[in-house]
Length: 398
Length: 131
Image (cartoon, rainbow over all chains, first blue to last red; front, side, top):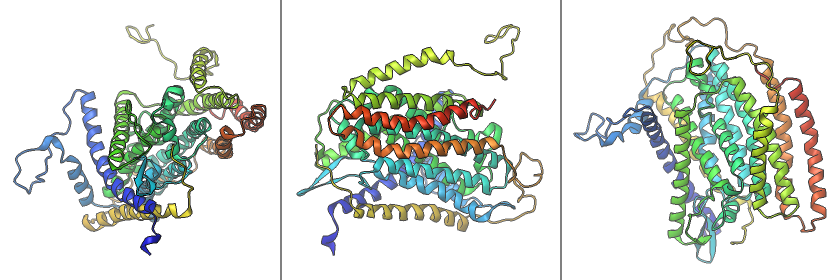
């Protein structure tokens, strides 16, 4: 029986068992990092008090606030799990689980460490080494909308309902440019296997150099898909109290919260895979198939790239103001979709003509230049939120 | 470059493991918090939070038709993109006869054109205007 189990099975199971706890722990500390980045942005100190004593152990040192995530988790567990009247009980319980499960399994195809030499064979260091990996990520990512929508619908709260509606419209709208930009990368590489896309970029030029504009579009769309600021209209605190999770408490709320961060990790890993060369170490010539040492280095390189992108997402959250709903929809439908369609056309032409890859960079630059010229020429329609001139105003003087 | 291992059905095995872990994580946490937390009911406490106002009626009422139209337009594009994925994978590895490639590109562009016309129609109709 044991001989039937292939090395790939063992490797995949080990990766699945190892990466999941690592990711959950990372999420816990990402929340701390987010609070720290927020406080540094706003010239505060941030959480620095909670250590590992939890009021029980005789520790006088506070470990720079590193105990905060554990304390938060414990507190979430001990709080009352309350279900208000009028809720759809079944969906109310199901929604946080439906938000968390796609977030937990979405990263499965990420090729964290390339190939590992295993005796005669070689195995992929990924939990799910399939040749439709990119499609898998998109498919699981689309499931994420259910948690938000059902959470908003089940709560029987007008704020939650509006938050759920907004989230649906937003995630559905940004999925189109996201899918189109992934399609363009596939057209460029001719592969849907995550590992092969990375191998194509390893020890070579990363895709972001060929496709800078596309990378920016993809990053914007993944921010919107994660419900991250400046696209966090689904839970806009100033307008909708808490949006779709207004009525949620204790661990149910925590599951929504964790799934947001897990989605961020998956989105950043996806970006790294498509544009930043995945496990490719810059300036080092590494073999695609390596021993355990190479795998560790590649995992570290992958993790470092993902961490940099996560920090970028957090800094964006604390720097940019939230978009209005009409601006959000306009950005998706009237800007990103036409631009990605134009880029699809350009990429198709380059591939059809067998031009070198650097033509893609020229195409990107040309499209960006064209946007700068055409953009102001498009009629704006009626502007209802016109600036009113104010005496002594810096931005709209009379 | 390493040779590609063909994806077999057995490669999906570890996904089952991961799915079990995900289910265990989600529902385990829900059950744990239900067991550990206090339980106190109350009439006022059971009201949904609407900034202190007593909630009037149910929240599940009619909503703006724009959301519906956006969903319809999304379906149009999403199905189109699904059809384009196989093309995108096959197209670069098409035989190197450059004479045929523009033809295949033109065919797909015609397919794309049908949706672009629908997109432009929706644009003219003001589907994407929220002001």
